[in-house]
Length: 327
Image 1 (cartoon, helix red, strand yellow):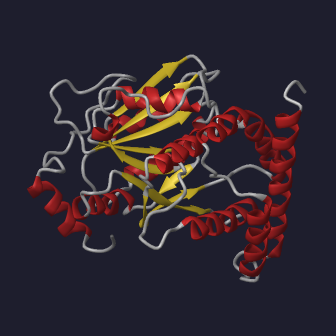
Image 2 (image 1 turned 180 degrees about the vertical axis):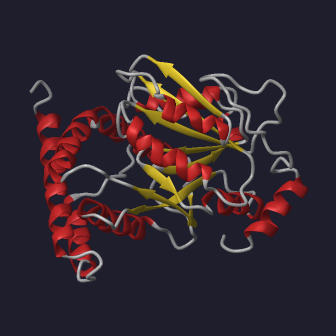
């Protein structure tokens, strides 16, 4: 899954899996497409709700992709208070960019709308606050060519260790991904900060995420894949950095909102009979393992304390809204 990016891209072109003709950088208006362009290999789907500032860094990381196949970017504005600023629209000079505006319906609905508007053979989901490593798409193309049996691919999510909140996120992500990784290379984990699927797996409809889940739609999808014995394969060389720019207080408030909105997804997951989320024993083990990892001076024990605070907030809010739904 690693190395030989230029040779692999040549293989992609020769095999017909990746188009050999790149989209020209023709400026597009939001929602418009080049009429006669050859369909791209990748469609990058990014839902946005008042995240224009954070989206800038994500779009820049896509412009910096090296030796990668053709791709388009589909941004779905899920009812933001303000339309996309010119600083966002100008990225259409670097790659085909569509900005689709819809009434606020939740992140699952926004991702489904992105699928509907996409034309690529492979859908790649990420978020506005994520940054793709420069070789991410080329490595993904290599994996798709070398392993045609894989339809669902979980990219490697990391934290931004340049700040305290990011180091806490790095601890959390390392522990979760190590715990979820299976001996055969599949992973019992799905995070739409970096997730890819061959579009052919969708059949005739564009609905991949349950719109009833306003948050936690990726975990609900994982439960359904587990039912079908179709776990994603983990692509360790395709790195996506989750960059959190919030303060500790802002991060905790976001955790409260997220945990409250995930209630419906948890109910739907329970109805599948599949256990996906960690129980209290698993969480304790995770905290012990991350405490040991936090001895690394590049991370530090303060980051572990932040992780502990976030876990406590998440568990408390989830319990409150589960047993007191009218609160």
